[in-house]
Image (cartoon, rainbow, N blue to C red; front, side, top):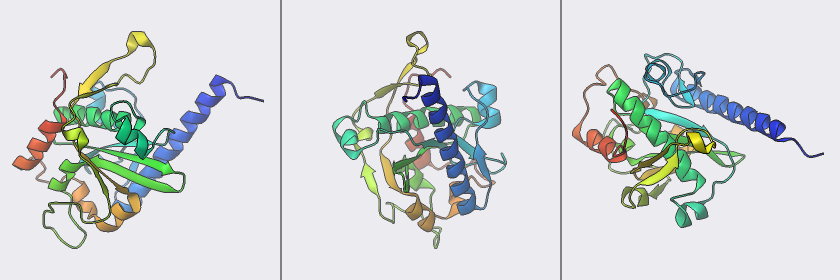
Length: 233
């Protein structure tokens, strides 16, 4: 017997929540700092300040993460779709959402937040995609030196950086009356497995230190590139 639309919807919601819990667990075990699912919906200013905007957030606000963390498990990812339909594919939609929310948090907290998307190209594998701007602060586990390129296996999709703005609906609704289409200039992104990321990146560099307000010029320029959008201040 075929499932009803309501049953399918509830199943999808349950699957998404379980994936978010898994991502929170992965981050907690790797970093030594507790992460949790974001419980509050919406992007109002008070909500952003209190609970950020990503799917997964640090449990303690003192552990300020440098990324807006989105957890996606929906079907539709393929490398073919990225290369042949980057303006409409599911991956670009995910990265666009993370970028949009990273801009909101950056404005609200006056801190440079980068987009990061956890996704599963296969049920047995966890992958991450994040802005190349993260190279300004991510560090290897055995060194505190800034790296000019990622030092472990990865894919680099730089086309976002020069293809112009890409537009997607950021309203989380398919109701045409409430759809909000926002064009964004996305930043080039790096893609790798979570296992490689966790094995090679120093967890401390994933977070802002006590001197988070000191931002180098390179980070500011990366943020400006990813944030050229029609947003209200």
